[in-house]
Image (cartoon, rainbow, N blue to C red; front, side, top):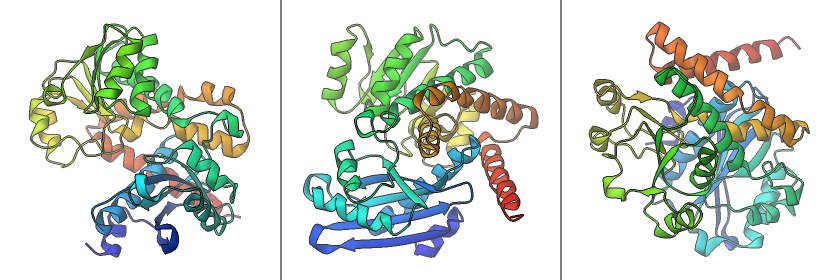
Amino acid sequence: MSIFEHMKKNNSRELLFFEEESLKLKAIVAIDSIVLGPANASTKLFNYETEDQAVADALDIAYFNSMRASLLRRSVGGGSVVLWGDPDKVKSEMFFRALGVFLNRWEGKLYISKSKGVSYADLTNVRKESKFILGLDESHNGLGQIYVARAKGAVWGLKAIAKHKFGNDSLKGLRILVQGIGDLGSQLIKELMKEQVEIIISDKIYDRIKEVQDEINDIEIVHPDDVYKTNCDIFFSCATEKLITTENVKSLNCKVLTGGTNQILKENKCFETLKAKDILYVPGYLINGGDIIQISNELEGYGIEKVESELKEVYTNTLSILETAKETGKELSKLATEKAEEYVRNVSAIKMLK
């Protein structure tokens, strides 16, 4: 697919390429929108098989950052920085400092935040050259690690889903399967424990399972091969994007499918199977915006107390969209897209008055 065809898919505005061969630094920067405010660019380091995959991922991440910010009425835009390379081979202090130099060229219209393959130590190296970084932990004058806010926001989202699907926003006693025990998945488990949830976990990496087992002795573990047919109330995927295919969706034995990834379904055909099985599908970008709430507050100079108080907005926003979808008969993802795009249009019109 050509670059312009990729951009047309989500009506993305801008795509840039940056390379420093001596450092093996290859960066793809996607800007979806800066109408609402400076672009929050999730920064991901991954060894893609092809340039086509890297471009597509950069544009998708930027689009969903815009979507999440718009749905939560936040004054940040959507962007992404995709670093193409093997993390074990390309990472170095100068690699990330060079990224910081490039970041400065945007003069505050683009801020980066942590995503897959990038550590907080990496961001501190970027910080040696640039101040345009959001989502740093407390030791570097940030508001804490953003996946914590994301997990807490997701719990509020799950409460809204429970209210809509089961008639009660308490999660107590529900069987929730968490697929993928990385930063977000492990933090989500901690938050769900507070809600007295019956938690089931699954991950292909045993060390991650062992870490959880060391803290929670009697937690239920499911082998990755059996994860889709496991009986549960809510299937929450924190694994890779587009993991649910037309094949494994047939095996799902849950009442709700959602997750921490923006795109859980690989193909639109999955919608038909989910509807036939009476499984409520809630796109991940509806409930995983806790980090956006934190980042927007950090950008505006507020503290963690305000972040904590505003995370409940994930609940009210999710429940409102769920109820509107039920009343109108509209597909949830289409309705969310309409609402997000409408808000951007309205803000854009207001700004034209200046």
